[in-house]
Structures are given as C-alpha cells and as structure tokens.
Image 1 (spheres, rainbow, N blue to C red):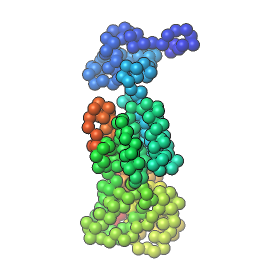
Image 2: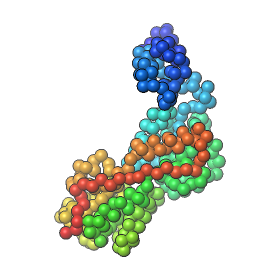
Image 3: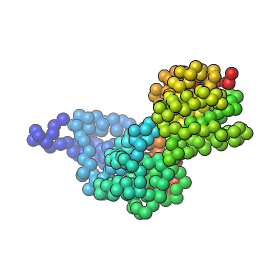
Length: 338
C-alpha cells in the first residue's frame, strides 16, 4: 500500500468508487456496513478497497458527523474472567459497528475515581460510555455527574435513567441448583463470591430461591473471593465436615481449588459430592473431573451493549435493559447422590 512517505496520496473514497464502477454513496454504505447493498455490489467494492489499500479516515468522518466514532468503557476488576471477557465482547461488537474503544480501568471503585474517569472520557469527546463496574453504588456515583451522552451500564437492570445489558445471574444460579435438586440432592452448599460484587449477590439469591422453592434449607453458604485459593480452603472445610452432598460454586476458579481440596481429602467427585461452577472458562472441560458449569455468552452481551448504545445514538429512549440468558453445561462433576 502506498503511504505519505513515498510522495503518493492515500486512496480516497472516490478512488474506490471509480475502481468498483459504483457511486460514492454506494462505497460509503459498504464502508459503514449499511444493510441496503447487494452481496454482489458489496463484494465488488470490498475487492476495490483491498486492491487500493483504502482506509477510512476517522478524523474526516468526525468533521462531517460531529462524532468521534469512539466509545468509552469504564471498567474495574478487569483481571477477573467475567469483566475481562465482557470487555472483549464490547470491543468486538464496537469494532463490528465501526467504533473504536477507549478504556479506563479503575484501581479503586469510589465516587471520586468514577467521576475522574468520566471527566477523562468527556475531554476525549467520546460518543457514548459503557460502564463495566460490577459493584453496588455505581449508579449512585453516576447520578450527580448529569451526563449528557449515551450511557449503557453492564450488569445492572431496572435503572430508569440508563440503558443496561446483563447476563441473568440469578437465573444462572437457579438452573445450576435445580439441576442438582433434580438429581436428588437435598444438602446443597454454596461457595459465594465477595459480598461487594453484584454478580455474587445475584448468584447467592438464585441459590437460595431454588432451595426454598423445593423446601430445602439454605443455611450452608461459605464466602470466597473468586480465587482458586479461597476455593481450596473452603473445600478443605467441606471435606472435613461432610455436611453437603453437592456444592454450587460461584465461579470456575473457586471450583478448581475446591476440586483439588476434595481430591487430597479422598472425597470423590461426583460419587461423594457433586460440584457445579459458573462461567464456563475454556479450561473447565479439562478439570478433573470435567466441570459442570453455567456458561455466560460474553460475545452476545457485548452485542447487546452496542445495540443499546447505537439505539441511543440514533435517538431511541433510554432506560431499557436487555438480558442475556445463561446456559447450563453438564459434564462429569455431577451425578445423583450415592
């Protein structure tokens, strides 16, 4: 591809139109992924784009549309599997829609840190903001900022002012526990995530609801911190007490630690205790035994975020929440109690 250093100008939209034998407007529709283009025409334009090495000029486009084609993502806990993969899903969906993503990762979650990050995005002139902060109080921290731009909050539903996108965490926990109940388990423990996480609270609520609906006790809950180490320590405790025939674990990492503790203590999975995780990490199918777990579709969640964002950018109403349904993946770590 020719560049500025060799004295030749970069190819323009008009050059692509001339090479493809179509109008300037048709090339624009292809570049912006407009649906009203025939497959044959689209193929011809894309071939001309590849041949000429055409690249869209975001700066020139922003002068016309008065948009930066950039979405800001405010995130925290991005080292954790759920937030990290939600971010990847949003990035992919934004790229597919022709937007760049600018990320601000919070070291601490506080109203001051959130306000500083939002001001940073406002200075950048982002077209919209996706908030991926899975802690209570996030909406309250946003409220006094009086933002005048499209906003999508991930993992929180029911907010009147903001659009949201979320995986139904409570439902995911319910289907995990209902699976264990259907197999005949009556003493089902829960290893929860940290209390200051929205997802952890929702999964614990789903566990309780499923047990209560079946007339079972919900008094065996142990708090972890999402890490395999905390799952290991709790697994040692459960192996010693032998009070549960099944365990619903708040994420796959804690389930990994739990399985190791059970193995060391001679507790067989699933013959002695059944185990269900949450997330369906790529490694879950290779645990010993392969882990039954709840899958979250982060790619779909990212698409839902961008659909909500694009809807607001086109003038649609705010305050709607779109929900992604989780799915139970049954493997070898669950069976009927002995």
